Length: 159
Ligand code: MG
Image (cartoon, rainbow, N blue to C red; front, side, top):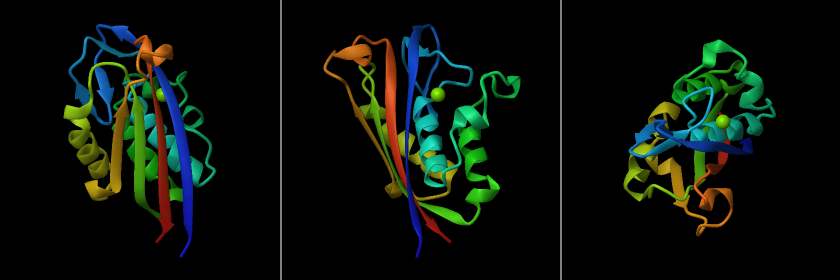
């Protein structure tokens, strides 16, 4: 049996009046993420973790923000595209673990929907997808509500 592990990290800035897409769902919020895509920082970290597991670079390289094809794109499509890469075909996702640092709004009511959505896109059961959320106790750029940062780790197994 052959396994690979990958980790991903992403940050997006927050601004008033933008939709907040996170973990594949829209979160009711006064602020949303500034981005070329829909700004789903959790999916971007997850994509980078998957790419990292196979040393395939990063999503900035794969989907450059200078390319209008990805303008406003639903990040679930980016995740599907990463999983559909020829190099990814011989592998299946064992599990993913995602940690989101966001000061507000509280994400607890949305964790299950994020897990379900990400699991559906990846074609695995929700018990293999962990989404955890934390504030930073008002410290740093996350604490000042200037942005959100996300870490993701995935394990993949050769089919
Ligand atoms: Mg990003």
